[in-house]
Length: 413
Image 1 (cartoon, rainbow, N blue to C red):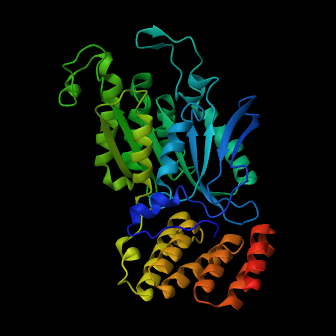
Image 2: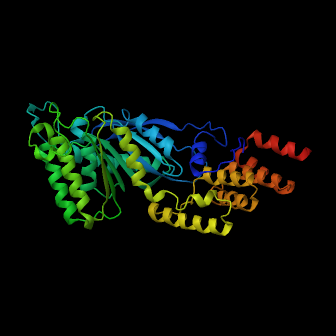
């Protein structure tokens, strides 16, 4: 490992350090602007793709995917949340930001209307089903064929895109496991989708699906400051219909335990419609991946925890991940396995260090860094023969002169 992790005593500081300390210089292009021509929409649709930090083009690992609607305008929000929370809270994932800069209202609204809030609509509306066909028949297959993606998908949408997100859950739940509807426009067309959603949530199964909904409540009424969360449902004016629709949907969804939907919602009293995406993405993703978080995290840092206990904890974690993702999945991302190995080396617990390094090689056999770390372990044990063995494997995989230089230096000792 080219850069050492310092001794870390808590899981929090450990994860914080992981996000700024990288084992190897990564010269791979990790962010791509791509596009696909849609026969459904009769136009080319642009999107961006961001690989996770541990992406190895020569590896075989595949990743869950987050699809973000209005992807270019909300890009920084998603990246800020993801970059700060991957590791303990979120898995490595591929992020996809889909452009809705053209024909946004047409693509994201769920029915055709001529008037909205007392004014004539001068844009095409009601194209959500068409846009759904684009996502299902063209975009997802393209992503799945070109990028290392699994079928575990999350959809995030704000405002009209939040309306579309609820539409996708209610009418096309097979496409995504997770949904985040940010301040969704559920007032659309006299709450037509809201009524449909209520009917389906009360009669259909949504087991295995998760939804997080947010409401920006800094301005519940456009001009009446006396409208609050406590009395808004008593108001019947057009000015509060947007917020009332979200509250109505959320309280109903919360009550439908028999639907099997994993549901949560949150009111943001100090946020406006334009500022609520950032905190919603943070809270929503943490909620959706609550199952991903470590069980008994303190035991990983406790010097008194035995190797056998750690192995059992990791087995349990692996079972949870594999069950949710539907494919065999390592119990920790590679950076964490490596980091815990170094942490235990510095804490004078070589048996634990070896276990973490060995497990990292098992799950990441094409990563030169995993072999380099095992070589450092053997160097710490004054085992030159095995250190050279693993350094040679790292060099064979990568061809990096760094490993060649380390081999030559170790041979001179």
